[in-house]
Every structure is written in C-alpha cells, then in structure tokens.
Image (cartoon, rainbow, N blue to C red; front, side, top):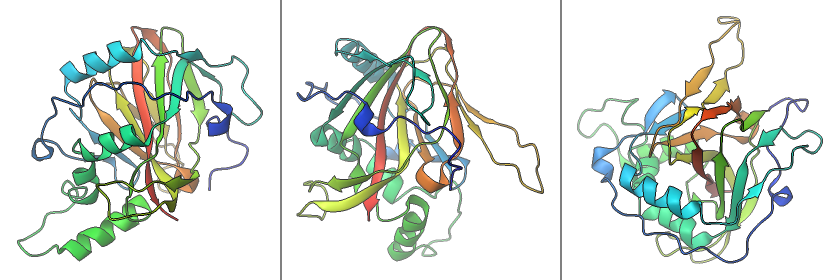
Amino acid sequence: MPPKSKKQEPKPQSRPKQSQSPNWPPLRPLLPAADLSLEPLLPDQIYLIRNFLPGSLCKIYASFLASLPLTTTPGKPKKDEALRVNDRFQIDDARFAEMLWSQTSLRELVTERFDEAEYEYEDGDSSPAQIAERARRLWGGDPLGLNANIRIYRYTAGQFFGQHYDDSNNITFPPYPSTATSRATPARTTWTLLIYLTSCTGGETVFYPEATRANRNPEPIVVAPEVGMALLHRHGDHCMLHEGMEVTDGEKWVLRSDLVVPR
C-alpha cells in the first residue's frame, strides 16, 4: 500500500463538477481494434495503446474541449494532496464513459486481447475461460467499463502535477446496454486511463519504481505525450509513484477516466 506520507491526487469531491453534459463530438473516425495493441510498458503496471484515437479526431476534441468552462486548480493544495497547477473540467457523464468503452477498441483490448504482447499461444492453448481469469487478475476483477467521472486536463507552459499516487474509489456503476448487468452495481476503480490529445515540449508522465534488493536505484519510466495515445496504469494500493512534468512549450490536453470492476 502506498505510504501515507506520500501525496495523493486531489479527492473527487474536492474538484468542481459541471451538471450539464457537453455535446461530445462523435468518436469517429477510429482505427479498428485489429490494428491496435495493448503494449506492456511495465507488465501488470503500465500499458500503452498507440493511435487509440487518430490525430484528426484528437484535433476535433482539443478544439471542442477548449470551449468548455475550464477551472484553474487552486495554487495551494489541501493537506496530503499533491501540488497541481493546470486547468480542468469535470463531469459525471455515464453516456460518454460508455461511448469511450464500447465504441472504441478499448473494451476488446482490455477484455480479449490484453495479453497478446506478453504471451504466445499455440492454437487452442488459450480458452475463453483462461483469458477471462488472466484479465481478472490483471485488472482486479471483471472489467465493467469506465468511470462516469470524466476529467479534462489542460497543461500550458509552466504547469505540472507533482509526485503523487492515484486513489481507488468506490462507486455505483450504472447498467449499460453493452454489458450483461441490468441493475446498478457496487464497483471500484482499479486503473487510471489517460488519453493524450496533443503533444508538447515537456509534460512527460514519469513513474518511479520502488527500489528492490536486486535494483536499489531503478530508472524512472518516462511516457512523453503522444497524440492519440492511451495510457493505463494501476492505481489504489498498487499505484506507482508518478508525476506530470512541467510543460515548457505548447499545450498538453488529457482526457481521463478509470477502469471499473465489481466490488
């Protein structure tokens, strides 16, 4: 479990929320899941999906998000919260969360093709039951979809997010047409999803592995913003210390949600 002395991300209730859902642009064009992969940057901890959203769609979304009423983060964080300086927009929008989950390649990659880069199978060596069990172990349960709590972050030159851990949150997951659930489900978040809509100078997401006897000074893992790339990283008790480095030129636009499993 992350040490209590380390800074946490701001709690959901400390962020201002909007009540009216934006008129999100359609999620198209999209690349088919067959052309994408869930790339293990650090197995069981950090995964990338390059070209998750095509550049043309990222431009549409970055332009649209700039029209939303963003709020600048307070300069002085609460006790035990990491220092973050950026502009953000937040809304509970189950419909858009479902769009991101089922209308993109995310659902298929997370539930069916998540281990292609880590395992090589002979025909018939991996049954649906075996795949489902590996998915449960990796994601912390059977993935239901994405957290309806949608967050938009804009980092301009000089803005950053200090070292912190992402908390897991208990939520109530609504029934969706694309799921087998017909009623609201007690659930929890287990992985952070970040979708980079722009590139910039600086603004890397940097992870800091814990020292071990075998490696007392592990190298940080650096993820530079890449247009259309999705990043999944484990959070909660198994979260790795990380930070968003200062943007030195350009703008870094990020779309954030979380992977949800039953509790």
